[in-house]
Image (spheres, rainbow, N blue to C red):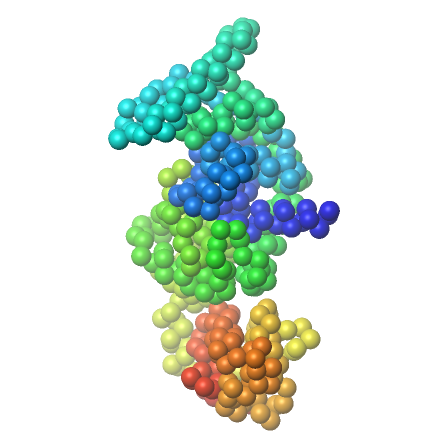
Amino acid sequence: MEEDEKTYTFDYFNADIKLLTLNILLEGFHESKDIFTLDQFLKGDYWEIEEILDEIRDTKDYGSVHDMVLQQIIRIVNDLEMGKIKRVSVRNLSGLIDEVIREAVEEKGGTENEVMMYSSYIDEIYELKKLKDAEGGEFDGRTWDRVDFSEDNFHKYIGHLSQICSPFIEIEIEFNETSLLSVRESIDDYIKNFSADQFLEKKPVYRQKRFYFSKQIENFFNYIKQLPVFEGRVNIPFSSLSEDGFEAVKMLSYLEKKDRIKVNNWNDTELWNVKFNKLPITLNSILGHMDDIEAQVVIIGSEIKLSLSFSSQTSSMVIVDQDGKENIINIQGQVQKEVLRVVFKNLENTYSEWSLYDISETLGGDDVNEIAVKNAIYQFNRKVKLSIPEIDNLFILTKHSAQLNPKYINKN
């Protein structure tokens, strides 16, 4: 049961939209906020993914996607023991009625289903009004136009209405500081392991695959370099959550953890305003390395010679440069580990030109073919460049062979 619980809560870190929820809650706590509105957790069109809509239709557990998000926020707070849900409320009933009427009037070519939908909204508002009238009591200017529920009884009153009134729905949380610090540490550990490609096989729900971290951060850079930069700030739209090439919340969380950016407001309802701490914004700058121009000077102006050693026991490659600086590359992919084990098994052959076919045959042939070997070396090259940006292609790859690049290698 404990293992099932770990697997269940792991998804809160592994899925971008749930990690975003955690970032919003933690940010709110550090800013001494305890009241959130539902629209702060609804970003872009991520929640319009067809698989999610199908899940709602099939299970009938939720009145709408927005209702599912609301219940998910409550589960995250409870499962991770982040605090206590003090209330779920619908505020500004009079303004909510105006909102529903405005939406209905602006609806073009409404179908019978849409007419029924707006009717259900009005019915739920009417029921809320009756609940409020039944409360009676003395006038309280803070709550007179607000209906409060517990986390257990709100669902039957605002299940459908949440679809149109997310700015009107409030969640008040009494945070547990100790638990929140533990959650922050868990997120930091997750991001560290994510950036080391430890979760490649644990792709998040509603995604077809997970790319290597090096590929994701390259894709992220290619995405943001198309956006305008003003005084070091970039406005990143929420539609980035739907990009296939990278996981936006994890990229931003990683860069913020490394102090290379600052997200101005995680719970913004328009876009993310992100301050980049080093300009110009280049792939190397967001990786914390020297920029492209500086790197070219180093490569052209001096001879780079590296000493290499690979440990199959620790699955790590140690690269020592000519200045004695040691870089440790942790190898996560099983094929990468096996390919490097073969290449470095006999030092007399390590620096030779290797046939991809010979490597694949050594590793079993049918299980690991030439394409898998080539991809493993290609990904290893990328991993080395992330750690040492001056190095382009530690292995020279051709269609059928691979060889350690002699311009970088110190055979002694």
